[in-house]
Image 1 (cartoon, rainbow, N blue to C red):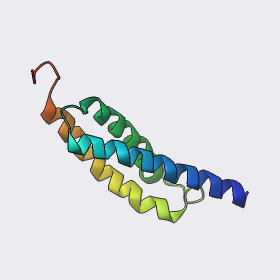
Image 2: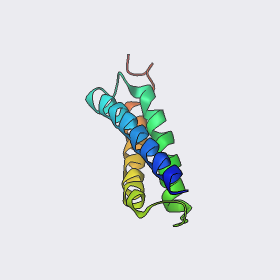
Image 3: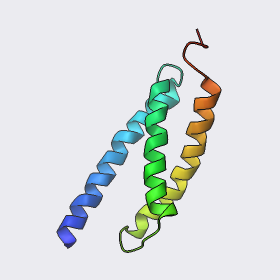
Length: 92
């Protein structure tokens, strides 16, 4: 069981790096990459919801919990950015 957990946590960490690259693209050009904001909202909702809103300390290593709280902040930022950008048709 220990080796499987290590593999799962490594996979999650690598997936978060992929999403970090996506977040960087949104930060550098939010208007052009507006559609990626929805993916960010989905990821932050799923991750923080799983770790913070449905706590079960037997499922998650403690090292993931503080990042889930940070993701709640990112969720708010993504929703604000999505609303401020408006629809793509309105920006033309």
